[in-house]
Image (tube, rainbow, N blue to C red; front, top):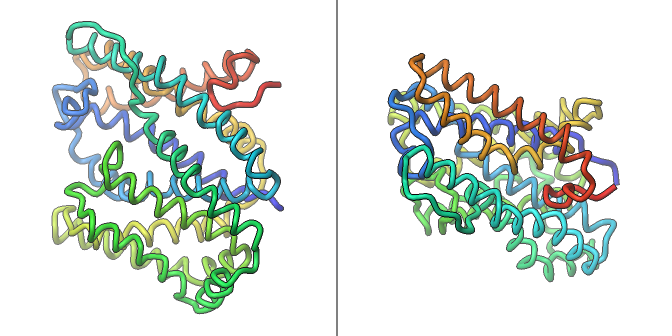
Length: 347
């Protein structure tokens, strides 16, 4: 099966946006509520673009994870899949629970001058637990689907996607989740019922999408401009008419359109290999794991400075990217026994 370079690019870009988002959180009133170092001055205006990306950033990562499961299963048995996911997700998750997460909390305790303690916690690695659980929950179903590639369900879905707007059938579980769970804050995915429910919807859709192969990609090509128009219209409505608030069902539909348009335009323009992508695709998982304690460390020294909030924000983003990639390039990818703790295969 040909590699989808566009999916690799989306993963790299979205995880890059995650680092920027986490840095911005320190400049918001809710920072202390999530035990993140907080600057005394806020950057509220950055919330305008953040409110656009936050409703699809994590759901799109879940969708890509489902796509990754399909691609991986094409060349592995279910037993080999279990072994692979335990290594790629389970080992970094346990390592993060015991070392990375506690280090993040330790640095936060130093910032707020709280009593020092060290206890297991996933912090930003909660995403790995979700994906790990989804994999095991869906493995029996995906194994059956793999063994029956032309089953009745797939024939129906192919027929539905033959219509130009057929892909909008898949928006129904997103709308249903928003109706049933009705989250107070749609982008609150971590450790919430909304995050678990929406995550498995996205993960399952991602698996189904790529299992339909050219039928899906052709459908994306036909609908990408329409979905972008719908997404930007709904966002502008939230921004100009509702001060960025909206009912969960409306946000869910906007989120779905963003994801479909991003997948469509990425398939059109980003599905090609490059040296940069090869490097970034390998680096992004380890960088995701290490970036948070690095961010908290620099917050200890940058946030107290007598400079503007925007300057602090830019400095933190630059230092986190720079040091995270330096640690990856100089240590993680080169020290063979370290690689499995960051989701990399040993040489």
